[in-house]
Length: 482
Image (cartoon, rainbow, N blue to C red; front, side):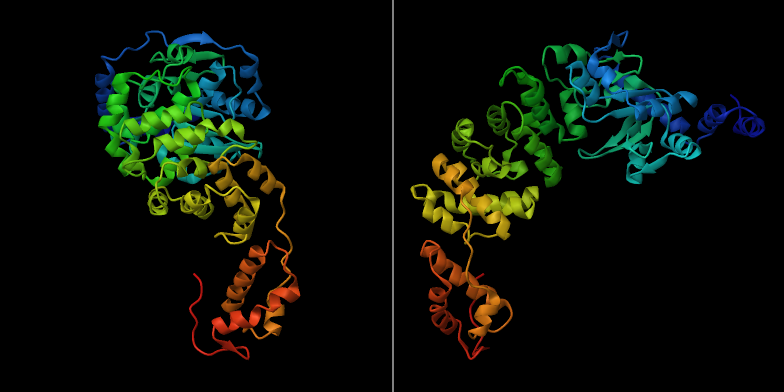
């Protein structure tokens, strides 16, 4: 075996190029031995899998394929060719191109390590952004100061905890493909058009089948979010709503509890994509049947029948449901809506819309006049610009299409009273102004928005008396509306 001292002396004396020096730097790396052990371990794990002997299944020559070759992409490819590193498209873009779609984003995999990529881009004067990705093997150069490309070093998972993975870099495309979730996402595309497919993802894609790479249980336990990714890609790829492999659903059910480890934000991102895809109604029912509901914040007895009712009416609407409107059908009370928010960490708008529907749907279900819904537009929670949206979504939920169309074109009338005016009539400054205006707006709405300024000011003395205000001063701290 060649000693490290000899290798070091050779490396220092070498007049070879960048590539040769990087090779010796790799040989001298103290992690080389442990990396080799992990690579051998991964090879042993996949030896019994069905792996294609010749991974090149076809060559692309479609209009969609040629459309990705922008000036920026050519610049990137020239750099990797110059420094003798291999780079391919990976995962989603390959899948999209095989389905004759131009991918929205291009993701790359390469044999170059992050440090090697950084040296290349620094030497060539290419700016890099998003340094946080480096620890995962991803470098993001900004080519021609115009396009950002995410490029990730080939890697293997050394340790996983169901959420994140510790990785080691490799030069083996097969081992990198093996760490990916689904066969349809495990393919690579060379820039001569060659499609590399080790795990028969091409056949699965053509047959519209969603399968995990290798063992479904192993892939899921590496990252439990893959449960939701399975359903998301099923909605994107499958031809029919209920063509799941029973064994896969059983594995999902056995591992559903693992979703409790996943952050609410990540879960909500996947749920929205599922709701926005094909077969959302059937997929939600299948998901609930695999017992994942309680682990993503849904109640123990979500109303799938109400969700189906809502879904069946979606084509009656001129605009689609907002996600919160759909998901509200699965909670049975405002309290359950808050628990769902606590788990999934909605935005303030999403939280308030979910709560508003859950709190008002029962009492407003029998209302068939527009006025009560107009009145709600100034009485609801949230920002003023959001209030009408909440009521519109409530009308969608209730299936009141005609009222929805009327309210959509209705504009909230001008409110004839402002803070300065009520201060002139004895109301002190501060938060109480908002309280008084809110009370006056309720009166204004109850009078179908027809009250004049003079008529509204007649109510002011009684409101101030109720709030214990005399001569512009508070006699004692009033109980204000929350």
